Image 1 (tube, one colour):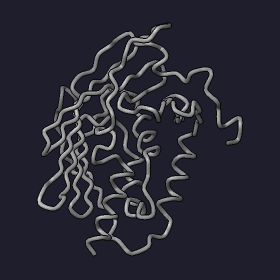
Image 2: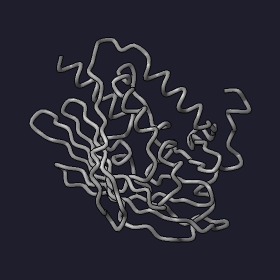
Image 3: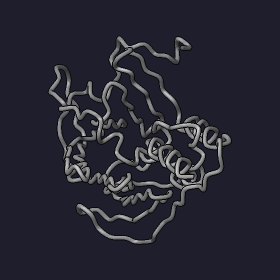
Image 4: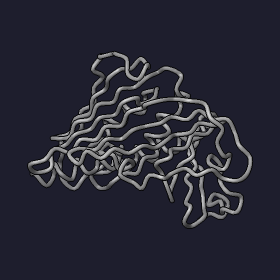
Length: 244
């Protein structure tokens, strides 16, 4: 029974990045690049991991209609909030492909609907109704629970980034099979949400320790950034055209 619960939680972690899989990736120091610059909204996010006490900083940039997460390297996503697409860029293979939000949601729902090897209680997702202010933004608290795993999302509908970003991000996160189905109900609720997670807190017991990860938006500012940060290099191969 414990194995079942553990596998279910692993599925939840992989589906929503909830235990900071993005946070513990290699954080890129974004170097100045040659070429044209564009004006962008730059979000600075601090990730704190306990019990290690490690703190990491990364940035998300929003230029034109495109958002990029600075914590994603080698394999990254470009979110186009106007066209409602996600472009998956592979900087190792030098390829990319673009998927519409509707297709992402449909594919994710099909995966979540697949039978699981054993019965596992689904995750519980609730709107707590609690509101407040964090980093100067009005926020609302949402809670996700699955066994010993607990996650709190404090979303703001202030104009940090366009509201289309959150469903694009949620529907394109990596997913773990075959226990992804535990998140089916939660996904249907999450995909309806709009806003930006000003504070994202997760905790889960591992033996005698409790892993805690907190991601907090610290500041938002306007800056000039290399246009290449939110573009696909011209020499990359479009998998949509090659049929690969």
